[in-house]
Image (cartoon, rainbow, N blue to C red; front, side, top):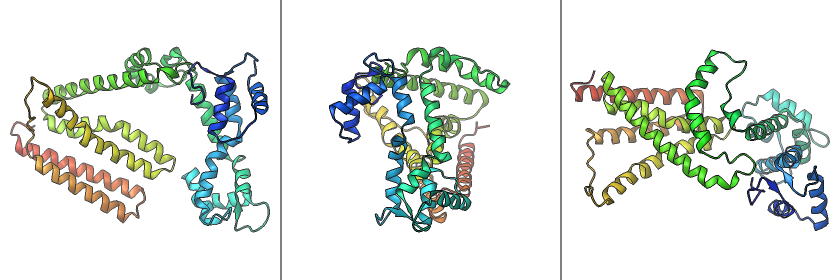
Amino acid sequence: KQVDVNGDGTIDREELGKLFAKLEHEITEEELGSVFRNLDLDGDGTISEEEFSKWYISSEERILSKVKPIFDTFDADKSGTIDRNEVRELLKTLEPKVTESDVDDAIHAMYKSGSTEEITYEEFADWYVHSIIYTRQQTLIEKQIEEEAQGVCEALSPPSGEGGFAWLKYLLVLPLVAVLTFTIPDVRRPGFGKYCYASFFLSIVWIALFSLAMVDWVEIVGNTIGIPSVVMGYTVLAAGTSVPDLLSSVIVARMGEGDMAVSSSIGSNIFDILVGLPLPWLIFTLWPTTPDVVMIQAKGIWQSIFILVGMLFAIIALVHCQGWKMTRTLGGLMFLLYFAFLVQAILTEYYRNPCFG
């Protein structure tokens, strides 16, 4: 889609030339014409997404272009070789769950000549394109391309050959999926790239509508079963709005990007506090017919602020004690901090509000 500049679902000769320029690969007009003819399998003068995808995912250079920067990062002395420890760290970057046996097998498979304690980039690259990691990445790419090519009917089709839980999940999310499918253009499909801005705007609109409905429904449920809105906000609303952060953090953490997983969550919460809270207040106070100030009616706001600051220092201390690594122990301790926060919030509200419970 980055290559298809005009968003018509095909690639012409000019767009293919811009691709090679973007890759900083010098190519003559004759060579460009030869490449274009090889990619244009049906000879219609354009390269379809299917034709481009077959060439793209079969190209070893695409995968190697991602491997070379990683190799150079671990080749600290720029000698063109990496030792055993660097191989271990490099493999962890590509696949987080790496054992010493995996390192031994990788070094043995990489080695061709010279010292067994030093692996050149050529040796590593040759091993990588024949490794299970490379095969797995190609499979994921092919699966992604196949999913992107599916139409509306495929997105709404029921599960086949699965149990009752899959059907229950399908029925629960079907109204949401149907609404989003029929109202938001799927820019992953060929020719729909030009609607990216409309898709972004409509997504924001639906998020706002869903958030409004969720807040009202949570308040109604809380009033019905006798739980204060403050506690519902601490628990249900907080968990509901944090699900996207959770999913994105899990995805990047499984890819070995621990820094990105942490920074994503921290950045999201900073945005919520510094933009999500003041922006509605600013709009409200600037409106001609509304008051100039917004009164915070929540009791014990200073207590909540001090607890928030205390939690921040506690998290920093825990991460430091774990050697600035994301471990299972760190995850368990953070869960304990969260439950401790919930307990104090519920107890505080219980003694502050006689009608609670």
